[in-house]
Length: 203
Image: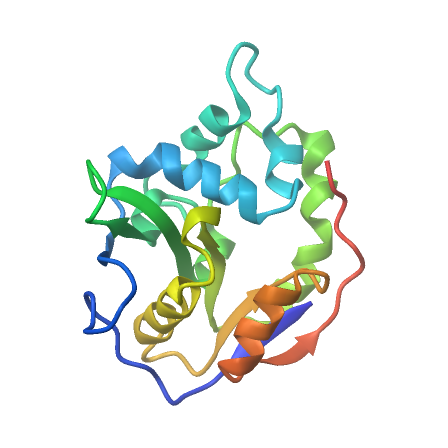
């Protein structure tokens, strides 16, 4: 399912009075890649795992995905991510992430040499959705670790995406229909269904 959102935009920033936790939103840095990888795998329901699992013998899937996120000047790069850092925990633990970018940038992205050609079919159902959302600012992932869910963090990350998308006529994303909590979040924010795709192949 593809959903789109249009203005008005919401303001975002650091922790507001009354927030349940000290969670600061900041741009991701390279040291965040291990958490970014795990959150990406968690949010994509086997799709990303299906692309990368076992392609580098001896490395765990999240470590392989980390190499994807370390590729500079690509849409997948960590530089297109924001993280929510729990400043109440030792070492400012990462609680969640936003990964978003102008969707048209995908057209100039170099192919990922780690993905075997035979696995590309895993993501084919998304291609038609991307074409329907051309010109939009695209939310690739909003993901929150289980310990931090149901406390408003998903909404804060969505607000951040809306703020980052200023200057674009649309904000778009793709979500699995069966992910009821995510669908509710996006519908409450004003997203509407723009297109449906055939089911993606889980790994």
